[in-house]
Image 1 (cartoon, rainbow, N blue to C red):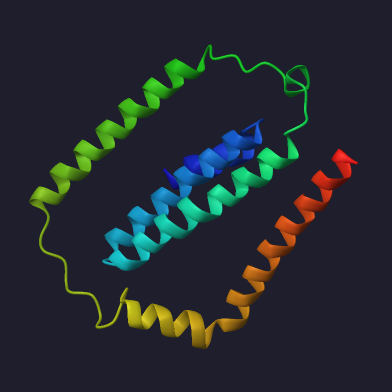
Image 2 (cartoon, rainbow, N blue to C red):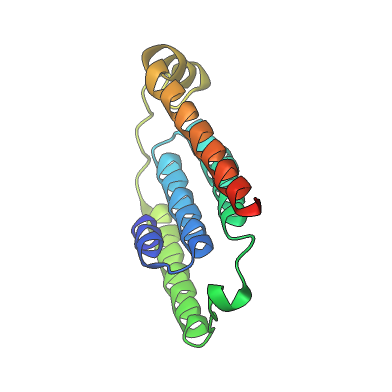
Length: 157
């Protein structure tokens, strides 16, 4: 699913569709965290990335395309999308059913290492070990939002 979301990000013609595919990819990454017994990281992945960051992306896209005429945006035909979505849901259902059957007959997993996926270990890594990349990411996101506001301000002038 993460790979399908990544391909969707690259192949989408509309920026909003690209963001929705990225949400799918982030959701699949959260499932991977769950499979590695990192429950906290999975929740953080969903709340921060699939929630807050994607809302920020949609806000920026909305600001950039706010003044476009509907004719400039182009039509979005639905033919072909409904069968593709139905096929994707069928494949997803089969994969989930297979995973459920496999989990029912699988031996028990060994316990994860102490502190793995915990809040204390995550906070230490984020705010002590990797504080510079964390602050740099926050700065880049702030610059992106300010840049969009400047672009929108120029359009209104």
